[in-house]
Length: 142
Image (cartoon, one colour):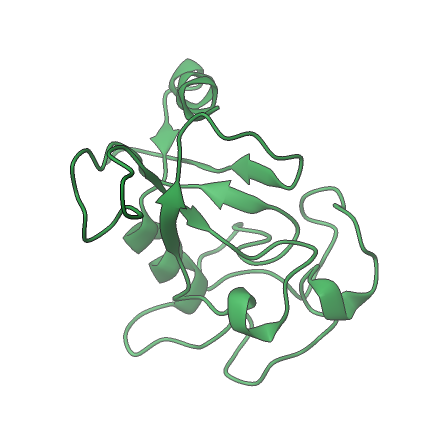
């Protein structure tokens, strides 16, 4: 899946985002905020489990879920997102016995407050894993 996502980003002159870029866009400048919209959890701002939709919504339809970077929507909730991959032989990042893993932004429409926080990432995913609740975001190289 990540090869397909990476190819889709490359086709528009971009690349898969890295975790630090997404966290910075979500939280804003250091020390940043806990959520894209501030420090206090708002259950209806982003499409998480407390919002009550229970499924993915079109990108940008959650006006309260705009990050600290202009024009960046749905930085938490809606779908998990593939981030940078290629952590080969990195036991500190990958699960035991996993030699190649990718980071994801874990917040989805099924996630609660903890997984919807800006600094939350996870490392234990194989690049071939496909889930309907997982998507990707492209970033510009500068």
